[in-house]
Length: 221
Image 1: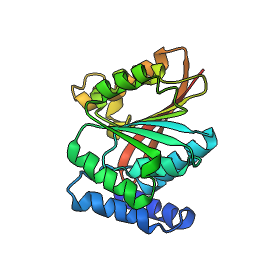
Image 2: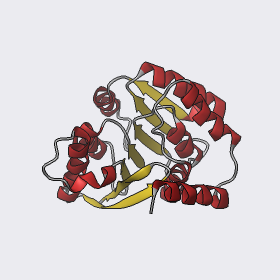
Image 3: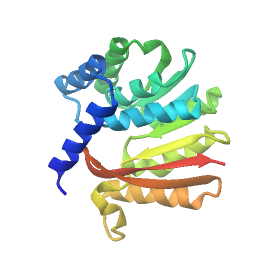
Image 4: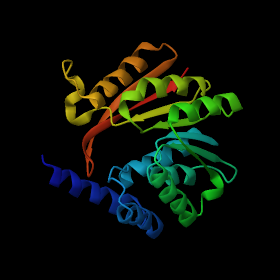
Protein backbone atom coordinates (compact mmCIF):
# COMPACT_ATOMS: atom_id res chain seq x y z
CA UNK A 1 0.00 0.00 0.00
CA UNK A 2 1.25 3.48 -0.86
CA UNK A 3 0.48 7.09 -0.03
CA UNK A 4 -1.00 7.35 -3.52
CA UNK A 5 -3.51 4.62 -2.67
CA UNK A 6 -4.29 6.11 0.74
CA UNK A 7 -4.97 9.48 -0.87
CA UNK A 8 -7.17 7.92 -3.54
CA UNK A 9 -9.21 6.14 -0.87
CA UNK A 10 -9.50 9.37 1.12
CA UNK A 11 -10.82 11.07 -2.01
CA UNK A 12 -13.33 8.22 -2.43
CA UNK A 13 -14.49 8.62 1.20
CA UNK A 14 -14.95 12.35 0.74
CA UNK A 15 -16.80 12.03 -2.58
CA UNK A 16 -19.04 9.28 -1.21
CA UNK A 17 -19.87 10.59 2.26
CA UNK A 18 -19.23 14.34 2.42
CA UNK A 19 -21.26 16.97 0.63
CA UNK A 20 -19.38 19.43 -1.58
CA UNK A 21 -18.56 22.49 0.52
CA UNK A 22 -17.25 25.59 -1.23
CA UNK A 23 -16.74 27.39 2.09
CA UNK A 24 -14.42 24.76 3.53
CA UNK A 25 -12.62 24.55 0.19
CA UNK A 26 -12.12 28.32 0.35
CA UNK A 27 -10.78 28.02 3.90
CA UNK A 28 -8.12 25.55 2.83
CA UNK A 29 -7.28 27.72 -0.19
CA UNK A 30 -6.93 30.78 2.05
CA UNK A 31 -4.63 28.89 4.40
CA UNK A 32 -2.48 27.82 1.48
CA UNK A 33 -2.44 31.28 -0.12
CA UNK A 34 -1.45 32.92 3.16
CA UNK A 35 1.50 30.57 3.60
CA UNK A 36 0.22 28.42 6.47
CA UNK A 37 1.74 24.94 6.70
CA UNK A 38 -0.44 22.24 5.11
CA UNK A 39 -1.06 20.39 8.36
CA UNK A 40 -4.81 20.88 8.71
CA UNK A 41 -6.85 17.79 9.46
CA UNK A 42 -8.16 16.13 6.32
CA UNK A 43 -11.82 16.61 5.29
CA UNK A 44 -12.66 13.10 6.51
CA UNK A 45 -10.96 13.83 9.85
CA UNK A 46 -12.79 17.16 10.08
CA UNK A 47 -16.07 15.33 9.57
CA UNK A 48 -15.08 12.96 12.39
CA UNK A 49 -14.60 15.93 14.73
CA UNK A 50 -17.99 17.26 13.63
CA UNK A 51 -19.60 13.91 14.38
CA UNK A 52 -17.86 13.60 17.74
CA UNK A 53 -19.24 16.98 18.73
CA UNK A 54 -22.74 15.88 17.71
CA UNK A 55 -22.47 12.43 19.32
CA UNK A 56 -21.25 14.07 22.52
CA UNK A 57 -24.05 16.60 22.44
CA UNK A 58 -21.33 19.17 23.04
CA UNK A 59 -22.07 22.81 23.74
CA UNK A 60 -18.58 23.84 24.86
CA UNK A 61 -15.47 22.79 22.95
CA UNK A 62 -11.82 23.56 23.67
CA UNK A 63 -9.29 23.36 20.85
CA UNK A 64 -5.57 23.66 21.54
CA UNK A 65 -3.94 24.66 18.25
CA UNK A 66 -6.02 26.68 15.77
CA UNK A 67 -3.77 27.03 12.70
CA UNK A 68 -6.13 28.47 10.06
CA UNK A 69 -9.31 27.37 11.80
CA UNK A 70 -10.31 24.52 9.48
CA UNK A 71 -10.86 22.02 12.30
CA UNK A 72 -12.42 24.76 14.43
CA UNK A 73 -15.09 25.34 11.80
CA UNK A 74 -15.89 21.63 11.57
CA UNK A 75 -16.44 21.44 15.33
CA UNK A 76 -18.41 24.70 15.50
CA UNK A 77 -20.76 23.31 12.88
CA UNK A 78 -21.43 20.33 15.14
CA UNK A 79 -22.66 22.52 18.00
CA UNK A 80 -26.11 23.95 18.71
CA UNK A 81 -26.73 27.60 17.93
CA UNK A 82 -25.71 28.63 21.44
CA UNK A 83 -22.55 26.50 21.44
CA UNK A 84 -19.03 27.86 21.71
CA UNK A 85 -15.55 26.77 20.63
CA UNK A 86 -12.62 28.27 22.51
CA UNK A 87 -9.54 27.85 20.35
CA UNK A 88 -5.96 28.69 21.29
CA UNK A 89 -3.28 29.86 18.85
CA UNK A 90 0.27 31.08 19.39
CA UNK A 91 1.07 32.58 15.98
CA UNK A 92 -0.51 36.01 15.26
CA UNK A 93 -0.47 35.41 11.50
CA UNK A 94 -2.25 32.07 11.86
CA UNK A 95 -4.80 33.69 14.18
CA UNK A 96 -5.49 36.50 11.71
CA UNK A 97 -6.08 34.01 8.89
CA UNK A 98 -8.27 31.88 11.15
CA UNK A 99 -10.43 34.84 12.20
CA UNK A 100 -11.00 35.69 8.56
CA UNK A 101 -11.96 32.08 7.91
CA UNK A 102 -14.43 32.09 10.80
CA UNK A 103 -16.13 35.12 9.28
CA UNK A 104 -16.13 33.43 5.86
CA UNK A 105 -17.79 30.35 7.36
CA UNK A 106 -20.32 32.33 9.39
CA UNK A 107 -19.19 30.91 12.74
CA UNK A 108 -17.29 33.87 14.20
CA UNK A 109 -20.00 34.40 16.84
CA UNK A 110 -19.47 30.82 18.02
CA UNK A 111 -15.67 30.99 18.26
CA UNK A 112 -13.54 32.56 20.98
CA UNK A 113 -10.02 32.75 19.57
CA UNK A 114 -7.33 33.27 22.22
CA UNK A 115 -3.91 34.46 21.01
CA UNK A 116 -0.76 33.62 22.96
CA UNK A 117 1.11 30.67 24.48
CA UNK A 118 -1.44 27.93 25.06
CA UNK A 119 -0.30 27.17 28.59
CA UNK A 120 -0.92 30.79 29.57
CA UNK A 121 -4.30 30.79 27.83
CA UNK A 122 -5.27 27.56 29.60
CA UNK A 123 -4.35 29.05 32.98
CA UNK A 124 -6.45 32.09 32.14
CA UNK A 125 -9.42 29.92 31.17
CA UNK A 126 -9.12 28.08 34.46
CA UNK A 127 -9.03 31.32 36.45
CA UNK A 128 -12.08 32.55 34.55
CA UNK A 129 -14.00 29.39 35.39
CA UNK A 130 -14.48 28.76 31.67
CA UNK A 131 -14.78 25.00 32.04
CA UNK A 132 -15.88 22.36 32.05
CA UNK A 133 -15.69 21.61 28.33
CA UNK A 134 -17.58 18.76 26.70
CA UNK A 135 -15.02 18.03 23.97
CA UNK A 136 -11.32 18.91 23.96
CA UNK A 137 -9.18 18.61 20.82
CA UNK A 138 -5.39 18.79 21.29
CA UNK A 139 -3.44 19.49 18.10
CA UNK A 140 -0.57 21.81 18.94
CA UNK A 141 3.16 21.50 19.70
CA UNK A 142 3.64 17.83 20.54
CA UNK A 143 6.28 18.13 23.29
CA UNK A 144 3.66 19.85 25.43
CA UNK A 145 1.13 17.02 25.09
CA UNK A 146 1.36 16.00 28.76
CA UNK A 147 0.95 19.61 29.89
CA UNK A 148 -2.06 20.07 27.60
CA UNK A 149 -3.58 16.83 28.84
CA UNK A 150 -3.08 17.91 32.44
CA UNK A 151 -4.93 21.15 31.72
CA UNK A 152 -7.59 19.25 29.81
CA UNK A 153 -8.28 17.25 32.95
CA UNK A 154 -8.64 20.44 34.99
CA UNK A 155 -11.06 21.87 32.44
CA UNK A 156 -13.14 18.73 31.99
CA UNK A 157 -16.01 16.94 33.69
CA UNK A 158 -17.12 13.34 33.96
CA UNK A 159 -17.99 12.41 30.39
CA UNK A 160 -15.71 14.91 28.65
CA UNK A 161 -14.15 13.48 25.49
CA UNK A 162 -10.49 14.30 24.82
CA UNK A 163 -8.88 13.79 21.41
CA UNK A 164 -5.11 14.10 20.96
CA UNK A 165 -3.96 14.19 17.32
CA UNK A 166 -0.75 13.00 15.61
CA UNK A 167 0.27 10.36 18.16
CA UNK A 168 1.54 7.65 15.78
CA UNK A 169 4.15 9.68 13.87
CA UNK A 170 4.67 7.28 10.93
CA UNK A 171 5.01 4.47 13.48
CA UNK A 172 7.93 6.15 15.25
CA UNK A 173 5.92 6.20 18.49
CA UNK A 174 7.17 2.68 19.26
CA UNK A 175 10.81 3.80 19.10
CA UNK A 176 11.76 3.96 22.76
CA UNK A 177 15.28 5.19 21.97
CA UNK A 178 14.24 8.03 19.66
CA UNK A 179 15.17 11.60 20.48
CA UNK A 180 12.66 13.34 18.25
CA UNK A 181 10.76 15.78 20.45
CA UNK A 182 7.49 15.20 18.59
CA UNK A 183 7.78 11.43 19.01
CA UNK A 184 8.60 11.87 22.69
CA UNK A 185 5.50 14.05 22.97
CA UNK A 186 3.40 11.33 21.37
CA UNK A 187 4.76 8.73 23.77
CA UNK A 188 4.09 11.10 26.66
CA UNK A 189 0.44 11.32 25.57
CA UNK A 190 0.16 7.53 25.72
CA UNK A 191 1.82 7.47 29.13
CA UNK A 192 -0.51 10.15 30.46
CA UNK A 193 -3.73 8.57 29.19
CA UNK A 194 -2.65 5.07 30.16
CA UNK A 195 -1.49 6.17 33.59
CA UNK A 196 -4.45 8.29 34.70
CA UNK A 197 -7.20 6.12 36.18
CA UNK A 198 -9.73 8.88 35.51
CA UNK A 199 -9.28 8.34 31.77
CA UNK A 200 -10.56 5.45 29.66
CA UNK A 201 -8.90 5.66 26.26
CA UNK A 202 -7.61 4.05 23.12
CA UNK A 203 -5.74 5.10 19.99
CA UNK A 204 -6.46 4.59 16.30
CA UNK A 205 -3.87 4.38 13.54
CA UNK A 206 -4.86 6.27 10.39
CA UNK A 207 -3.68 6.38 6.80
CA UNK A 208 -4.89 8.78 4.15
CA UNK A 209 -4.12 12.05 2.44
CA UNK A 210 -2.19 13.12 5.55
CA UNK A 211 0.03 10.02 5.48
CA UNK A 212 0.44 7.51 8.31
CA UNK A 213 -0.48 8.80 11.75
CA UNK A 214 -3.30 8.45 14.25
CA UNK A 215 -5.07 9.90 17.24
CA UNK A 216 -5.76 9.01 20.85
CA UNK A 217 -9.25 9.39 22.24
CA UNK A 218 -10.33 9.16 25.86
CA UNK A 219 -13.33 9.83 28.05
CA UNK A 220 -13.10 11.22 31.56
CA UNK A 221 -14.74 8.90 34.07
